[in-house]
Image 1 (tube, rainbow, N blue to C red):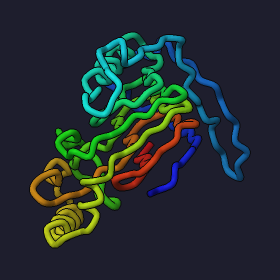
Image 2 (cartoon, one colour):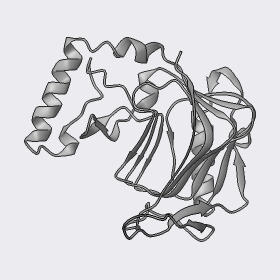
Image 3 (cartoon, rainbow, N blue to C red):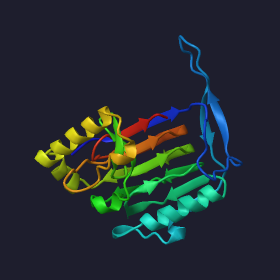
Image 4 (cartoon, rainbow, N blue to C red):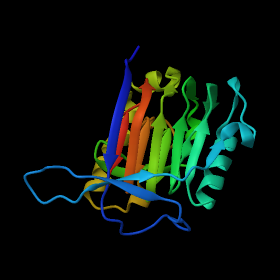
Length: 239
């Protein structure tokens, strides 16, 4: 059994583009000044408006049988459209597939909450822009994913936990998997467009990362605990 990981991470860069349709009207930032031996802008930590969107209000039910994926997606959309706030995972155990964050959304796990991610690969399709060992490609969605977003966060005293059955089977790297990697490395080194590097098919079996923020700005991960991971646990890609 892999150990539980507790973390606090804040990342910021100058924003070049916003998530389509995003609003920053409700977001302000606290600044953290870092004493570094080189010029460095203060870190901007997003502070969210006091608007909560509990997933239970969008039809999610606790337990290990009924997935809350659609309810979580609806809560994230409502939070984003409102201009920002917290999507709250209440105390209890909640089963889900992929969670895709949007700008100005804080995924907040209340004390006593466990968000359990299925090990069914179909729950992580459609494929999204990701990477494998440094090579960009389209692959199964990370369990928690955000692409080109501003002010995204995962906070709270709760826990994120991955079921590992399928991912443990895939970790053996059989011949089909190795052949897929060879094709990816070959195509990428030749400059093939990322859209042509489609890896979520057949027996390629490229496991998804647990958390991936891809090309995001003002990222906060604080206090949550993480148990088990299909592949890389926290992947901050070009953030």
